[in-house]
Every structure is written in C-alpha cells, then in structure tokens.
Length: 104
Image 1 (cartoon, one colour):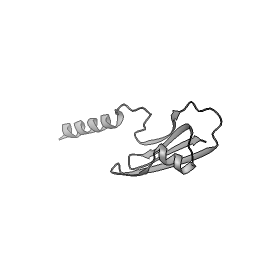
Image 2 (image 1 turned 135 degrees about the vertical axis):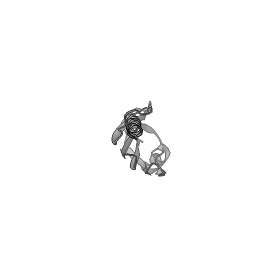
Image 3 (image 1 turned 180 degrees about the horizontal axis):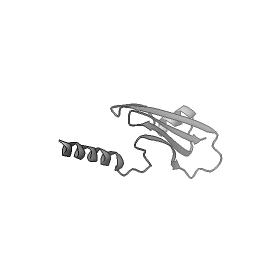
Image 4 (image 1 turned 30 degrees about the vertical axis):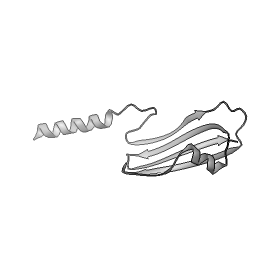
C-alpha cells in the first residue's frame, strides 16, 4: 500500500512540475501575463484601441470571442498597428483572456 501511495505521489509531482512546451510561460498554480501577439509594418501612432475577451471555467467550458477581428470591430479599427494579449489563469479553474488591438 505504501508503495502505491509513493508511486501516486511521485506521478502527481511530475505532472505538476513537468509541462508541455508552450510558446509562452505558464505557471502551474497561477499565470498572469501580458505578451505581444503581432506587429505590422504600419507606421505612425495608433489612435484607436479595441479589445475582445473570453473566459474559461474548470478547463471544461470556454466562452467568448477573443479574436483580433472582434477587437478591431470593438475599436472601429481598419488598419492594425500592433496586437497585445493578456491572460490570467488560476489552477485551470478560472481563466480570463483578453486581446487588445491598436490601430487607426
């Protein structure tokens, strides 16, 4: 019985310590990031900002539209300057994701 518990504990620790390779840093317990998504060749200072959001609950349900197109529509943007991305996730229980588009 002790051997089974020890094996289970070791597997649980490995599961939380080792992760899949991702293009951005991920915290096992908590993640809060602000990262760039894209930059275009459009020069000048962006005068408009649009956002789009989605949420995830228990990694079972995810709802919303966090697309660049939705953020462009929100800000009335036709010419994109750059795009940023924000994420906040707590233990995979609750996650908030936001895309911000800057442009003209």
